[in-house]
Image (cartoon, rainbow, N blue to C red; front, side, top):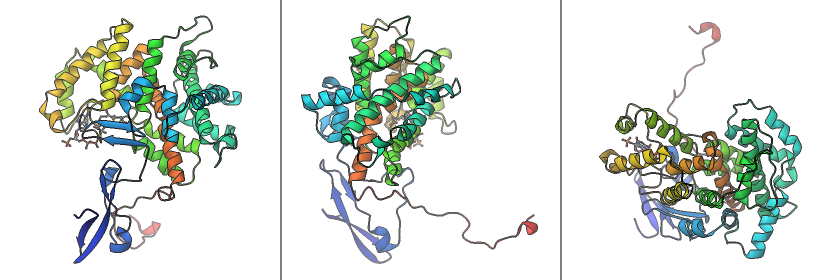
Length: 432
Ligand code: CMC
């Protein structure tokens, strides 16, 4: 391979494939002309090694455990920023100035309500409806209630205002879905509260029992949302880009992303971790049984919260979440047996050859549920929390995809057909 080209030798012909180098030195072989030049496609099931776009939003080095949004290290952002500052950063490429942040906050407050007619929808979901299906449905429906906000160009203020509206309304929908699930009256947002404090207020305030907003919980929630805010071309973000590439507007594209996130291998893993830890507890803490099951190739069982498609070292988000988890439980004087189980499981896994050889470390979902539990958020809302965090990333990618002529071409993978090549038609009367 030369510095600028990879050479492909196929059917006695040598093809030069350009090398594209990213700003941090990672290299990609450009195969965009391959089909035209050779008649061949590439096969890469699960997109293990396929770059679907060039992006300026998030940098991730899975070998070194680096994650940066727009060039800023995730640890610095989690320590020093508000979630909405990070949302602004992902979206615009720059951290907001004070006036920009004030305007963003103002928009969040101004647009935090959802149309009262939408609230009737909540009444018609079955009582045990999943908050993820409610969220996905409601966010898609915003397109119909606020069509002016979902046009090519938002007439009221462009993408930052649209984002503020979507972030704010989605937070309201998420909290309302919990209240409906509980059969409690809805609690409306307050203009004086920050994004995270407002969410906790809408979740836990009751007419007869006012909720005291705890700054420790607000700070922990703020960190969790920042750590989930983007993760480049993951399954749900790729879904948002793919759906958006067909010309679908922002809200239904985000609704599709929410559905993709729901899966237990993706955003649904945080809830699955809690179920796993609870099962281990109920099983007399028989850790080895679960470890052995996960190592058995025929069981189909996995230790949820371990492993990642990209990270082959400790997930940098998990490092921060683990520490936050300890801090929250300590300052709140909460003793949660599930934390002890999680810590012990991690310890056992970290010395087990099966997990070492496969680079399986705790991921973002392993400790986050224990913090949500300490906040009083029920397990069926965990993936909704992930979705709230991921929202700015999805919007930023949808916008980037639309602005970039190359990556906004309709997404359309190829396939290698392995079915029956060709056969004569058999009429119904002759089929036996
Ligand atoms: N427990 C046991 N074995 C595992 C696990 C696990 N959690 N994860 C991967 N492996 C094994 C897998 O069986 C395979 O072994 P072998 O080479 O012998 O066949 C090897 O490790 C590689 O696994 P893979 O399935 O090829 O890896 P992948 O990149 O396709 O999957 C993953 C990544 C995250 C889906 C997977 O690690 C997994 O299922 N983890 C558990 C679910 C989970 O925690 N998901 C949250 C991911 S982080 C949040 C997000 O990004 O959404």
